[in-house]
Picture: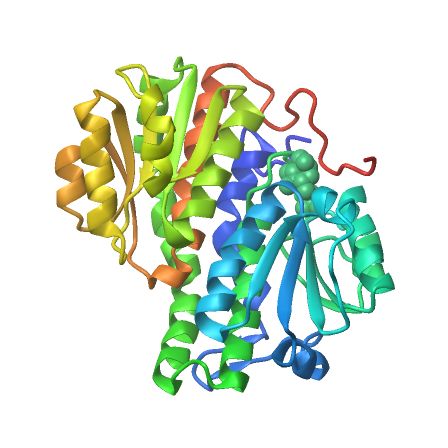
Length: 369
Ligand code: G6P
């Protein structure tokens, strides 16, 4: 097992560090930035299905559901296709309205999650076209879907999902860009820019990983907190949810993810000097608004740990601690902002002596309802 961990203390850490290379594996041979080409074998012949769809329904569970939420922003923004993201377990029992004009995307690392599989079967019965995004080759979901794309992240052993999440987002971004190009909802210049920027993500992730030692120091300060709040807006709202989930899963500390602007409708009541608030405050359309949120938290003595863009000044002045990530277009930011949050939960869990790779009560793939 030590050999399999490749010199890392835990599989989770190894998998976090594998992200630059597995993201590259995910787009290798599929993304040719210089030529402006995205080619996904499973997608090509079904492009008309997507382009003519009334809407895309994404079904998934856990971390894969969070990747689906990120995709909702990407698909609607770039390809202008309405998207609904559903917990597979809720979708299947709701007598959902699905027609032949819907495209369903099922996202699953393991390809074995029982609720996701049941949702796929239901969607197929109702005549929808179902596309799978799985990591495990030959898994049940990859066989039960009409077509799909593998993430090629390699085996993920840590129960808390890390590299599966970023590679799922990589695949979903490629699909959205391809559809946007076919539909003409993106300019040629923007399309080419996104392709080049996507190719730079592995280097950006590598750079984000360099903050590991600083993040370990931050973890030392907050490891005994009993509650955490995670805030983000837009593309980074799902990242806040995922950050909170990672912390809950492996450290057993209660954490909640929230859209930053919703803070005033409830969570703000919880803020005092004992509440660390992780805020994703990168350069974006919402930057000014997020800075105001940070000021509100500070006024109530909350402790702020911010994820900021390299070179940031305003948030750095306000926050107690900062974790830097390189600059990338807002659409692609979840691929980098996720990294410090993975490391933060990892270090806290290690310091609390928790079983990082196999947290209590959780399973890597949930094949029962
Ligand atoms: C379990 C795992 C999570 C995972 C979820 C969905 O709860 O512990 O890490 O996100 O299942 O799994 P899937 O394999 O369908 O992505």
